Length: 58
Image (cartoon, rainbow, N blue to C red):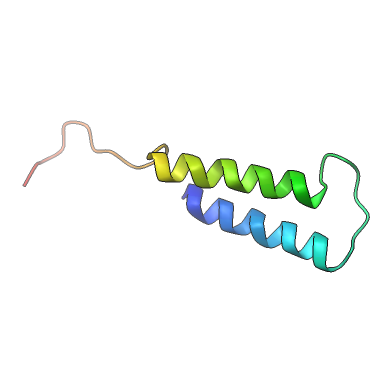
């Protein structure tokens, strides 16, 4: 799930950069890209992965 959110943020950062949209400092393409990198790092680290506690093991 976090990987999909990261991909969406990378796409938004690309659109902001490609269209040369003037935004405030919070939503600058670099900041959106860094948030996407953070989400991607969390995804790779396994945060947000669904775990079944007490579930059946095979």
